[in-house]
Amino acid sequence: MQKAYVFFLLVFTLVLSGQEKRKAIDEKEQEISNFTLYPNPSVDGIVYIKTLNNKTKDITVYDVFGKIVLQDRISTNMLNIGRLSPGVYVIQVVENNKTMTRKLVVK
Image (cartoon, rainbow, N blue to C red; front, top):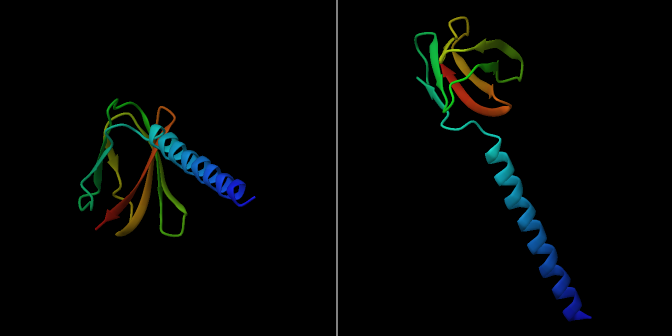
């Protein structure tokens, strides 16, 4: 009985660890390749968002309370954030059904 319990515990642990690894791989595959956001912190009201494909991007910027403060769709790599007050934000970029989320500091 004790051997069966140990065997069950071992199999259960291996299955869980395999699922966690697969989940991490799936999340990584959903991220945008070669994502670059600069300058960060931003001081001049413009940030540049570069990706491997540089296609049209849907941008959403959230404040620290989760409120949407800016939404835009850009086909270039330049985003105007001049109307944002100085602070810390979260920027979400969607390109080709892939998403990247980063912290954005505006000074």
